[in-house]
Image (tube, rainbow, N blue to C red; front, side):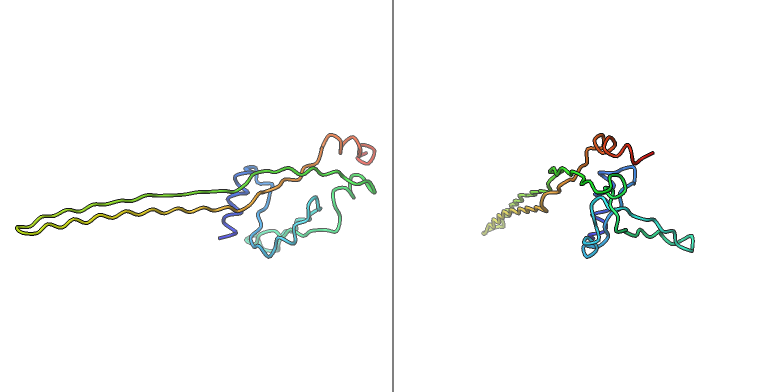
Length: 135
């Protein structure tokens, strides 16, 4: 269920398909922001490629010893509130008796999955700072 939810979320925010969803919560410790990843193709054509995280980051590649400035913004928050009301009435009469039944019900569900924060780089500044390394 977690895999389907994250895959759906990634498709919503990245329709081009450049992001890869996390299939298990246990794998989330492997996520390193701005890390360089190597794609390794498998031997057989039906196997999916494997992505291996390296020890290098984008700042190591483009700027050397300089530190990249990352800004953090709130991207979106997951909140939901769902409710429903239901009522019903039944009346019947016989020769000497009458019966009346009435019922009401209400349900409410609230869910909050937290806030998603987004880390961004200033790409123009990054290109200016690393212009001598790109030659």
